[in-house]
Length: 535
Image (cartoon, rainbow, N blue to C red; front, top):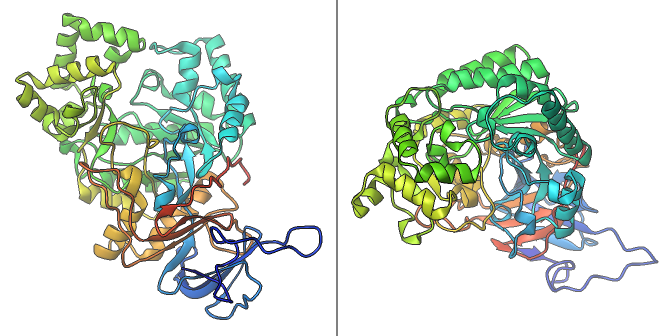
């Protein structure tokens, strides 16, 4: 795909020598992308154009064939391809990917150049590093495959101060949590996240979230995995909006869905509720991944009281016959007080993603129970005991029609909700294919979205929500994070049984004007960096 004017290997291409600079200072590097359909990320119609990249920034966008490029270090022929901004993932869990060896390429290979991490109330523990500044410096030393925008997890802050116990923080604990959040903001965190379905966030209330969210500097975001995405979906949205109004912050609803078969069809009312809040002036947006299954820990299937106190307390309860019997009743006789995944989906719609015994992976809880000749609830207990609580699941909780209604909404960004690619077992294929799946399945094949609208959901919309000022658009002055893709072939290829498959149709990914992926292959150089608010 790369060419040079002389026909020799393009200067700056892998293996090509760097041309000598005139004078003492190195010459500013110039890359020209010629003849592609430029989709600039704003939602405006694409146009055939040349893109001039100088010194790692977009210098100009000119009519196709009009740019002189005899002095370019690299010329990329993008004829027949789409040229768009690097994708921005608003909801990722790749917090510790910088520390991973080999490189975690699951996101960069699908065109994601920037990730918002620290979601669902989880983020790395800063205490071993002396605080958030020390944590971020440790990650900086390791280097980044994608640009890294960390949120601080409320669950991490609460656990550091209160452990995994229920109850409200007292005055001193509230001050400690506030100081820890302030430390994160000063170190460059982009906002606060909550995971109100998981311990210890499940033990908190709205007042606690408001008190912390009020401390966020102007423009930072409160992102929430809400308390319930099924039976109490609208009540959970009301809680998130209440935090936004009382704290005066921007709120991002994480992976909006209607979870649980009895609640399918309820996203229309949820979206209307959010639209009403937007008309009232609440700054609220939402994201979605383009699949009908979610993924989480198997432990999340058990009631909140069972999860209190940390891992040792949970393990003791798993060994206690009385606790198991009470948990079984709570799971199978749903009282509506918590998001009960087993009641919502049934054992036959929950698939084992990772377990201590690999032969269990890929089976449903119902299927595994039949194979082992035991009760399905006993399978849950067995898997948690064998894995010491680390077993994970893929939960077929959603209806595609609901997901598409969320995806089509103009205030919805596309996300992966993807973990680092070091998991055992069969992780959710969204980790490898969310963005190409939208472009292939829902733009080209199903025509749910137009190309320009889809690219906006992957770029400028997320940039605007989180305050990324220098990325998300192909405009002069923006950082040249760029994706060149084939609109006729782009598609995810992973499945729930074989998820670890990169997508097809990504020809080139650039970060700061430097190629990092070419023809679907990672070039092996980490060019991402940790971004700070204002970047």
